[in-house]
Amino acid sequence: MSNDPIEVSAAVIEDHGRILLALRPDKPGKPGGWEFPGGKRKPGETFAQCAKREIKEELAASIIPTGIVYDKTTNIRLVGVSAKLHGKQPTPLEHEKLAWVKRSELLNYALLPNDIPLAKAIQENSLTLPRTAPPEKLALYIHVPFCLRKCRYCAFLSHPPKKDEIQKYTEALIHQIRTLLPMMPYQELASVYFGGGTPSILPGEALLSVCEAVKASIRWSGDIECTLEANPAAFRPEDVKLWQKAGINRVSLGVQSLQDNELKYLGRLHTAEEAEIAYETLRRQSIKNISLDLMYGLPYQTVSSWQDTVNKLLSWQPEHISFYALSVEKGTPLQKENPNLPEDSLTMREYWLARKLLKEQGYEMYEISNAAKPGFHSRHNSAYWDTNNHYLGLGPGAHSYCRFPYKNTPLRAHIDPNWKIINTKPLTKLQQAGERIYLGLRKTEGVQLTPQDEDIFKRQIEDLSDRKLVTYKGRTLKLTNRGIELANQVMSEFV
Image (spheres, rainbow, N blue to C red):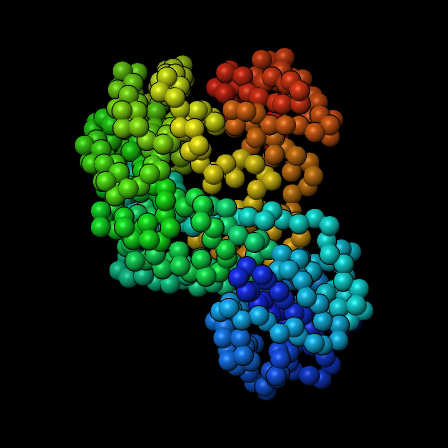
C-alpha cells in the first residue's frame, strides 16, 4: 500500500437523535471522496463546501465542518461534516461498499483491531465493529483561564484578562467545541462544568453563546447538571438570568472562609458579608443547587473560627459543601513566604469537626472532602472518581480521560491552544486497575475490587489492612478514619 495518507470521507447526518454516517475511500485517480445524492465534489471544492452545496437544499441542513484527524498508526485521514436535519428523513446513499453505522461505532473504525486500515476494510467489505464501546454519556469540563486577581495560594492556570482577551478566547472556545464535540464517540452529555480561574468573570452573553455551541454539537438532555464556578467578587446579578437561559443550573461559590482576617490572608477580594450577599443573590434568582467551597488548615485559623465559619454556612442551608485543607503550591506567593502552617493534629481536628457538624445537619459525606444534602451529590465531580465514566476537558491546561475519535481505548490527554490533541500513552491494565482503586478510595462507600485486583495488589491490601488504614470486606476496600488522615500515602500504594 502507498505511504501517502489514505483519505476517508465521513458524512455525519443527524435527525432527531438518529445519527448515520456514510464512508467511502478515495478511488485511484479521483480527487473527491464525498458522494451525496445528486452529485459529487467539484474540482477545487473543499469538503465543507461540497457538503453545503449537496445537502443544503435537499435536506435543509445546517452544516458544521468537524475538521480532519490524521492517525499516523493507520496512515488515515478522517474528514467529517456534521449535518443537523430539520424534520426531513435522509435519503440512504447508494454506493457499492458503503457502510451506514452509528457515530460511536464509525469513529472507532479509524483504528481497527489488528491495525487493519479503514480503507482496506471497506474495500474488502470486511468491516468488524469493536466489541468494546465507550459510555453513552460524556462529562464536559470547560476551563476559563481568567480571574480578577490571583489569590496568594492559587496555582491554577489563570490570570487577569487583557483587553479583548475574553472575547477572543470565547470565539476560539466556540470554534473548538464545534470542531471537536461532533466527532466524539459519545451520544450525549452527562454533565457540564465551567471551572477556572473564575468562570463568572465571563459576560452572561458569552456563557450563553458557549452553551449554545455545545448544545448544537452534542445532545444536551433536560436533566443535565451544568455547574458554573463563581467568585462572590466577580459576578453581576443581572447575568444570573442569562446563566439560567444558557442551561446553568448549579453554582459553586468560592467562599473559602467567613472570617475577614482569613480572607485577607488568602488574598480574596471579598469580605464575609459580600459572600453572604452573593449567596442570597443566587437564591433570589432561583438558583436551587448551590455548592460552597471552604478552606481549613490556615495559618492563624483557630478551631473556634473554623467552627464559626462552618456553622454560619450551614445556617444558609446550601445543597453542597466542599472543604479542602490549604496546600502550599510551588510558585505561588504563599510558597515564597514559607508560611507557618498549623500542626497536622490541629488540621485534622478541624476536618473531623466539620464532618460532625455536617452530619448533624443531615448532610451526606460521600467523598473525602465533599458533603451534600440527599440527592445533591456532584454528578460531574463523581465522574472523576470512577474510571467507568469519561470526561473531556476543553481550554488551556484542561485534562481529559476519554476516547478521542481515532483511538479505541481511553486516553489521558491534553489539548493544546491550537486545538491539537496531545495524547499520553494508553494506560496499561495495571495502571488502569491502580487508578480505579485509588480514585475509588476517595469515596466514602469505598471501591469494589475484582479477583484480578486482589491478585495484583494482594501485598498492598494486606499491608494497609494490618496498619489499620483500610478495611476489606466483601470485596469492598475502604479507608478507615486513620486512612483518611493519611489518604495520599495510602493511595500512592496503587499508583
